[in-house]
Image (cartoon, rainbow, N blue to C red; front, side, top):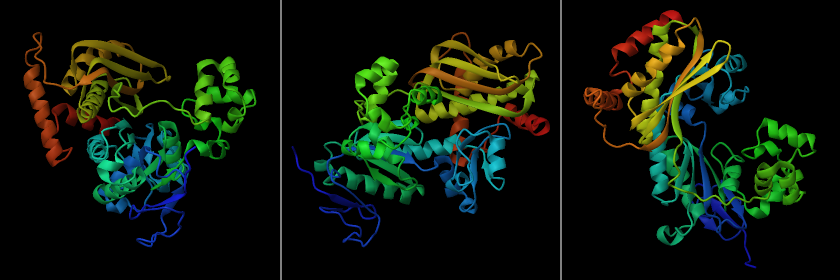
Length: 431
């Protein structure tokens, strides 16, 4: 068996010491961490701290010491919030009216995904400069496998990650939290242990002590229903799962039981795969008041088409399947999909495709509280295809991309379409 020795990492100068130290002998910093497998672990989870809110605070210094919520209107939900707002109990996906009740002094900011996507691309570029094995799982988090990079960079993975955190903080003016381990599951668990601006290390040898006391719901994939079933059977903590056999878990809960047993023991065979495909891109809006007027709904449809197109362009994808999502005032969800002959990422195409679907659903007297657009069956975006049925699409596509370039250079409000202006006017007078 290979012997391991305690090593320490200074997060402020990236130096690694061969023993446990609380004060870095190189830069005199107290921001040190230590672990007996520090030099051996190479899989990391990178998680931006309160990403959207951090970007908004970066761009508006007046928000620095104020609680910030990024999200929609009174009947929307919280996309994210800063840590000041979290002290008052605000959480992601919380209804906005509850968030404002918990934190009435919060500043609410509408999300700007173009800005967030630009920052995400910069972070990914910095990660890919260290290793080709980078897998972004969302706009603000991803995995990196630094195995075998020591000779190339002349530094250990832990040292490279500490430098990465400082570079992101210096260049993008936001912070990240890092979890370092030997597989993806443990790396993600580690990144959640020391937020914000954290760096935690978890190895398989730590699983019993660190994961054991956590609730079973801490394992990704264990939802409320499964957690309740486990609790009824006497399994409340990960440690309870660690105490029983794999076969017993499989007999009781099938594949879900096997998955939970593996995670409870720190087992995860998934690799960091840069080729992982995004399954869909979407956007939705919850209205402040229910809407039944078809023209107003079409205006809102255009808004979510633009937002979905912006996100698709930011990720460099186009989709064959376009889906319209509606939610009635009684909370009944409706989805209608169309498969295109060619993939698209254009707002104009999304709008023209889903407008007939919307008109069929709004033919009655139903009121709606939410509208959304999504594209799936994604492929890397290529050139704009010529539509023989609608030959003018090429001109509209060129015009849309010219608008994108102008907005990217001069700001989101630099160019407004007539429909968008009418939509904003109706929104101000109806909400």
